[in-house]
Length: 397
Image 1 (tube, rainbow, N blue to C red):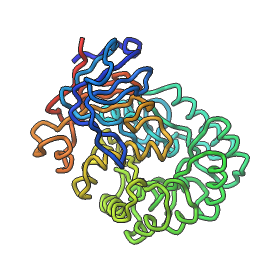
Image 2: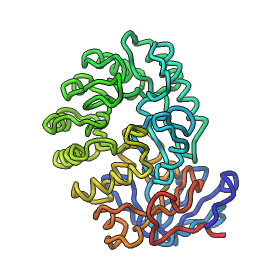
Image 3: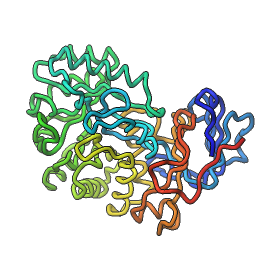
Image 4: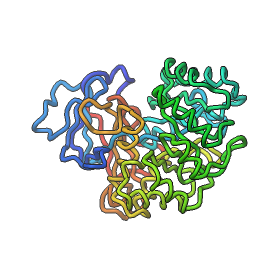
């Protein structure tokens, strides 16, 4: 299948028909009764049955051939540096590889792997602003990278957070990766950040790199960051009783990552379901990391949590899309009119024991991705990283 010749050739009206299964990204109603989506200007303009919609005058027309369509997956926890390179693994093209795993948006938890990362207050602010600007202007493979997440250090004052917010910084890097590790110190700075409109994430569990520290449940609760970062550890997890305490003891985001303890991941997920708090669950990879780069990390977490967490696959897809979009205030992640036209078209992998896409994921298999679309523009065809799908979409002439 040939892709349309460049983004400029695809601008205008996009029509996708013959969708076999439409995942909404919304936990409260994860499946939609529709077979057609229309987008213009990079935004969804209509969702419904083909016979009821105006599908004429399309610049790009796609026949889904019965494939499922999901909002683009969102990786809630990555550590970018500059460009599409990671010094942690000395690997080029890692973000583009994630595109082939269905990821259309990423959220930085801090640009901590930059060689010689500045730790003085002037330097850390400069790095955050530079990263925010750089990834706003540069999108590898079209992937949206929300970057510029400063790691807080001792000596910062409230005006530093006001300055960062005024410059466009909306995130803090993982609390605990710098010199601020005590709960009472973090609590004050997290509150300053929240007042300025900056969202915070706290490191949870044992140290992941030299300089980070052990952050236990009491510290997490005292700091009161917006997101409990990698609640299943990055890599070393807290005792399961402390994970239970975090799920019960606050209302903040529960982030489960690929590069963590799988038993702890399943435990946190089961606690969230038991407490009827699934809307708090978001997924990330915490990569690049010592264990490498995982282009299929989000898909693997969806399959793991569905298969071993005994949850409907469509609900876990919502954790990786709509839950994250709402918590991170992103424009994608949900199939709604006015949202970004970020889509993944996929199907059951060939020879899977599952009868269809959702059943195959529930049985632990990864889906085969046939196309990824970002802002209404086709960014990739059949994935080079997933297993081949039974069916793939087609761009019609």
